[in-house]
Length: 219
Ligand SMILES: *[C@@H]1O[C@H](CO)[C@@H](O)[C@H](O)[C@H]1NC(C)=O
Image 1: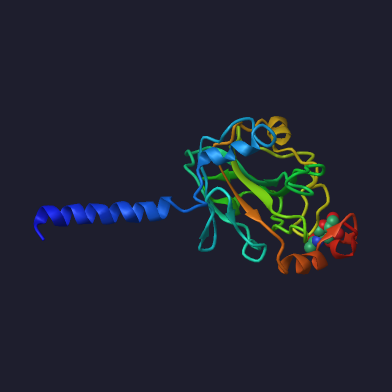
Image 2: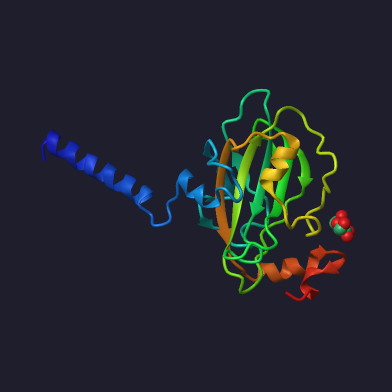
C-alpha cells in the first residue's frame, strides 16, 4: 500500500471513529433542552454543562439509575474569575412526564459557587437524589448553572436537608432566579433521566414528607 492509500485508509478510520462517538442513537446536544422551554427555562442556556456521576457522563438525556445517582454529580463549566454562580437540579415531571401537577421538584440548589467548586458553595437545598416512584415512568432532571449578580444570602428560603421532601414541590427555577436576581437564561445546562430501581424503595425508608416516612405514604 502506498503512502497516499495509507493516508486515505487512516482518514476513513478516523471518520468511522468519529461516527462511532457522534452516531449513538442517544447522543444529545444543547438544543435538546428546548423541550424545557418555556416551562423551566425562558431560553436555551449559553453552553453545555459537563455533568458526571463518577465515570458516567451525562449527555442530554442520558439514563442514570437512582443507584448511580445517589451522590451529587460533578459539574464543570467555563466560570469567569470573580463571578459567583448558583447550580440547580430541577425535575418538572411530578408526578409523571405527562402531568406536571406538583412540579418542579427542586433536587439540589447551591449558591455562591466560585469557579467550579460546588462543594465550597452555600447549600440552599441539599442534594436529594432521584427517587422516581415505581410505575411513574421516566423523570427528567435538568441541571443548570446560573450567574449571580454578586454574593447572595438567600433569605427566606427553607434550606432543607437531603432527607426531606418538604418545601421542594411546586418549585419554579425561573421564579427563584427572578427573586434573587440570577441571570436568565442560565449560562450552562444539561439533563439526565431516571426510572425506578430498587434503590428508590430504600430511599423511601429514610426520607420524610411533612413528618411522615415516604415509604408509608399512599401515592
Ligand atoms: C431533615 O429535615 C426534616 C424536616 O425538617 C427533619 O425531620 C429531619 O430530622 C432532618 N434530618 C436530618 C438528618 O437533619
